[in-house]
Image (cartoon, rainbow, N blue to C red; front, top):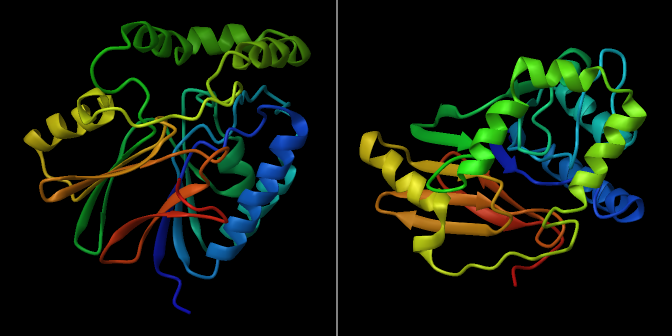
Length: 250
């Protein structure tokens, strides 16, 4: 079997809503990675892989070791893997690059593959509205904020982060629903972007709802999340499809 497909997934949110459920989801993701490993040339994980992540100088959050081991194995086999910073795991620094050979993407990434042009981004802070988060994102990503957080003992720092995550949509098992395309802020962002330059495919995470929307000659994909949907996308050199692993769309 030729290994020439490109896979996209996001929003695993390892760590919520509890240890046991997160471990079961980790096993699910590892099974998915094993299944696609025979076909994949590249894998793009578009953010919020972890519900919280911070790399201290000599410490990382405990857990998720099976996932990390599988990622290292795939990179060693020659598959290129890219991690995007999401709003939950924006404090990724160089651990995955040094230890596993994963490339970290801070914002958007533009690709050209098989004559098709891709725009990739986690999706946070884009489009209209959400002014409060856009300000917070600048603060959280600042060198000063990261330096100050690194001064907190890991036990306290991770504890604060877990308490904060208790307020998240997925922690409370809120399943997103599609309402109206005019309310889909990433679709609005994509339409505005396409007025400036052409992309065949625009792929995002963050929204927590699998979406496949045609925008003229372009396609908008939201990758959904892996608590309710187990959704991902695959590009085979010609077409881009939104698929589901061990699950069926509702």
